[in-house]
View 1 (tube, rainbow, N blue to C red):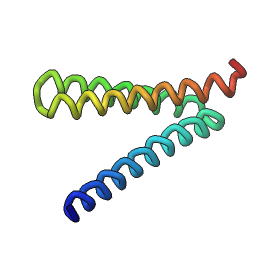
View 2 (cartoon, rainbow, N blue to C red):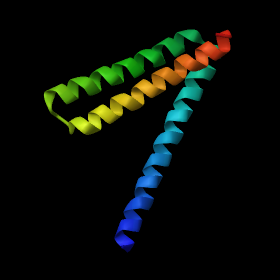
View 3 (cartoon, rainbow, N blue to C red):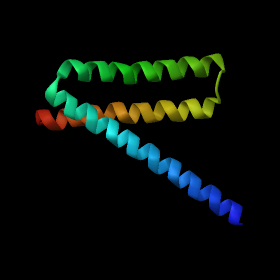
View 4 (tube, rainbow, N blue to C red):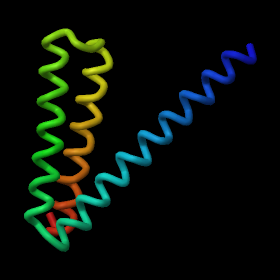
Length: 92
């Protein structure tokens, strides 16, 4: 039972770290958009590139397909969050 609790704590820590990094990325992109829109475009393209690369890896069978699907979902959430920040800033 103690081992299971340790695993749960580790998973909670990984989830919290992932959430923090995703939030940081969205906020960073949003702040950069205010300062330098060209950089923001590059970062958005990087999110697209990461999603495309993850899809290619999944198709080639290089990684667990469930893990790749989860990674793509996270990248889509980051993309949507950035778009939502842009819409909020533009008053849409």
